[in-house]
Amino acid sequence: MPSAARAVDALIRGYQRHLSARKGFTCAHLVAHGGTSCSAAVQRILSQRGLLRGAVPTAVRFLACYQAAALLRESNVQGVCCCGGIPVPFRF
Image (cartoon, helix red, strand yellow):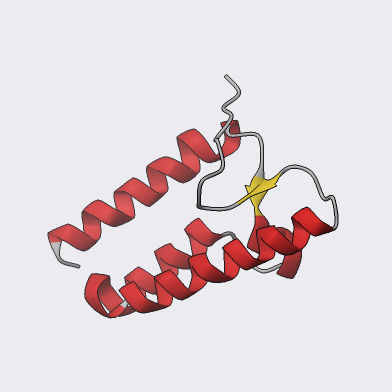
């Protein structure tokens, strides 16, 4: 694995271990569709395809998560968030 891919993988693992558990919400895509969280899905995509070939599938996943968040907001489901202009509340 090239050094850039290793760095991105380390950043995702750090996010999963240290920030994800404290942020106070879960991935909207995971809540709406099951499966894996976006961070786990992106980590898998990047490990299989690399940074350049994984860019489009990663963007597609984040778009799907954004759409899932909009769907869940209409349903008044609480405790989910997605990438975008939504403030990130942290619990420590």
